[in-house]
Image (cartoon, rainbow, N blue to C red; front, side, top):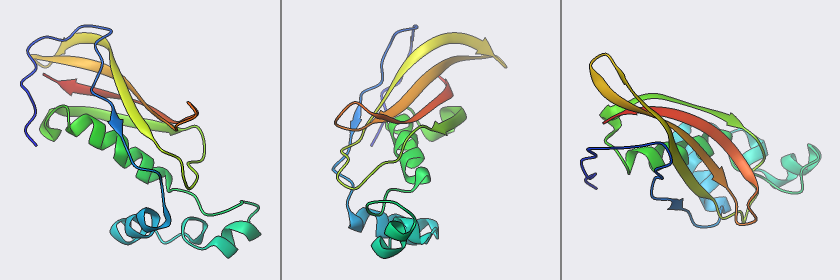
Amino acid sequence: MSQPKIKTLKAGDTLPPLALPPVNRTTLALFAGASNDHNPMHIDIDFARKGGMPDVFAHGMLGMAWLGRLLTQWVDQRQLREFGVRFAGITHLGNQMTATGKVVETFEANGEKRARLEIQSANQHGEVKIIGDAVIAY
């Protein structure tokens, strides 16, 4: 997918949201294989229940990957200068996540125009699961 060339940005501009299908066991199994993160809390219902959870739940890094996808569907990954997150909640099976972002500041650094972004993912009930920030060059 080719990104449009961004010429101007200002505080308050928003990124096109990334709406994802509901989290299911197949997604968790595929991510476990791709990331080599086979923590049984994410793939074994009996283990998750023994740990006090009603069922398995999504890997935190899967949620971060979705925020990375939000960013790289908006700008080329070579324009990413910083990217960090804080995990704020558990993403359960059936959660339909939407990743969003907005520009909070524009500035210049190292001779290039940059924008600082606030990003997050929330489920269909508006419950925020991951909060983050990023800096992109444009």
